[in-house]
Image 1: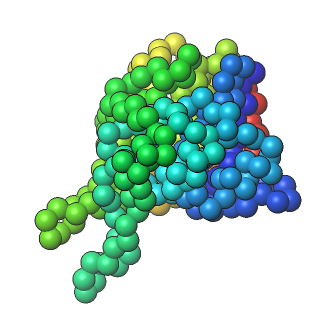
Image 2 (image 1 turned 180 degrees about the vertical axis):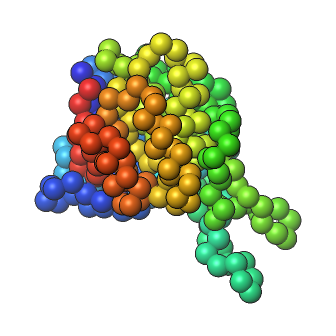
Image 3 (image 1 turned 45 degrees about the vertical axis):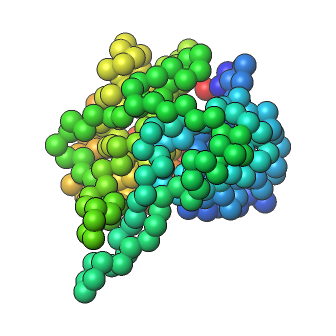
Length: 279
């Protein structure tokens, strides 16, 4: 059996003592090892792990979905508890990046990149393993690497930018990747934010692991921040795929989540902080 516990998320499950924050982190427990996928902003991960009696000192590896602060901000605190270990991610996780808060009369932006330097984290024991390709990071556990942007309807978030000289250009978040667990009942996909597009991501995974159905999808889908047309097309394409369960988190948004509930009915659930999903 594989157990996934949501340690950081915007909302919380009905459990006294669990705290919410804008971010995401999930603990993956297999029969052999424990792995952490993302670390949230860092405000709640140690508290929630302790409350749920999850020992972060027993981690085998850490996986990062991308370099935004709401997924990497807790990394230093986790390393202080867990000690030296491999941290898997894309080479772009250290890129400087911003979110546009206001465009007129001048651009006002906020830094949203990883709040630590690579050398700072290495001093705390991080041994970075950087990948761009689809990679088996542990037995039966894969990282998608860079996801090809092939659909015509999945767009980049216009609020996300990088600085180029004195101006800003669109940040396509090339470091976005997801975690895939090859479970006996089918693939378990854990998303950070799915900046590459949820359908792009799932098709990328199925092209590398053909013939495997999708048992469970968990995590941020990012459809909460994009237009209705993209949400409509995403849900239509999702319904064509062999998905047994879908549990949304973080950047999905409540209105799109309700659309997914209508589409998937009993196969839908909220993957809130404190939720435990068994496969």
